[in-house]
Image (cartoon, rainbow, N blue to C red; front, side, top):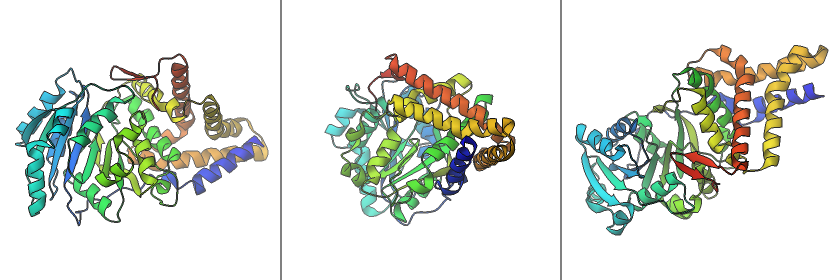
Length: 405
């Protein structure tokens, strides 16, 4: 019966679970029919390693409308803000230091906001500007990233906002392409899973599977279907309409969310449409050189994803065992029709990984290693639960998030 059950499960996943394994859609470079003003908000805390390239690529966007970059320096100690200003000066962009987030909100946007409004009024693009905001201390109950984003939103007046991580570089056509998808067909939020770094042995072994498992958890076709309740986003690139953000009550309504991208998309989709896809126009340059680094990335949020439920943890681990290990064991040790079921289930699982492997230019032979890769993710998920139960909570950039949701 177990052999038949695992085949039935894989039959559903492969043929009826939102075509998750197709590794689509992917936006192609497209000029938008409308050119709303856009403020690009970057929350940054100790991002000296990547901020230069991220800021430079955003200031170099080939966008026909008004846009600016608002960097919120979240108590960095490594010169992040200074490096960002130097990057802007190197490419000839204007730099406006705006003080703290509170001061910025109090003056209503500052000189760069006036320039953007004037440009929008006459239908011309102003020169890109980097705004640097010194973030205020994080209040209790907020995640650091969301508190930085909230300050950036308060400093902004544009009708469209792009939330961009500090470790992502963007093709000059990226902003235009995102806006084109936001406009037609109209949605409230556009997000893309950017290409992750895949250079070290750990990255080559585990990063494609990270994308694959995310697609399995949140099938993109279901996310993009207005009739489906499934909603998700990828936090590195989120383009959102200001009125949609205001409709859900602003960033404050999700202020404690550790998995903030998915939480934001779920809130937005309750009253509007969202789009999630893969990006060929943006890539993360954050390295994960060792297996431990990827372990920590998974462990930080895995138990949060399970809503800190021991019951859901047990169900998840048993489900992953059924999906990845039962087919292999039955294929190797079963007899007759049971072995046939195991071979068929294993073949469906391996085949479903191939499009993601192609996206990352990896050998198809990696599909045979999925049970071992899944075991790594299962162990990291269990570690996430144990860490929470020990009272440590998630930790990121020197901050503990014991009560994160």
